[in-house]
Image (cartoon, rainbow, N blue to C red; front, side, top):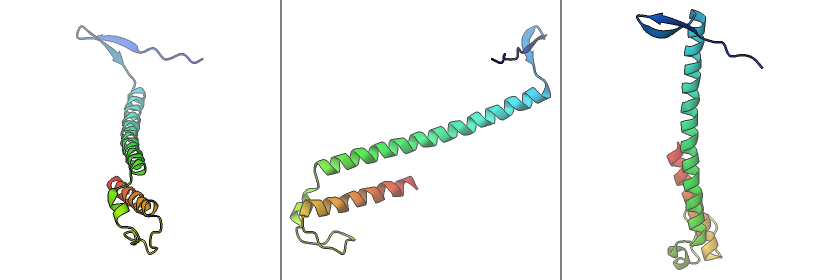
Length: 109
């Protein structure tokens, strides 16, 4: 197991300080940049997770109770669908799910 290097402590103006070589200082700055970049990536991933969780909750709600207008418009084609519906709830639910996915995809861009 490698030992961690011990900092060189100095007293400067009555205050304790740590002395770094130029190389050590440059390594410290590079590490801080890397951590900053990783933090930004983690933040973006967290936002994507939240959007995905919301999408799944919306899909679950939609599947549990399809909109009433689906049942009222029996036999008509779904918006953007060239094939007329035969099963009202299933056909309209499919269109609603597709619209929901498009809406979430648009907000992610």
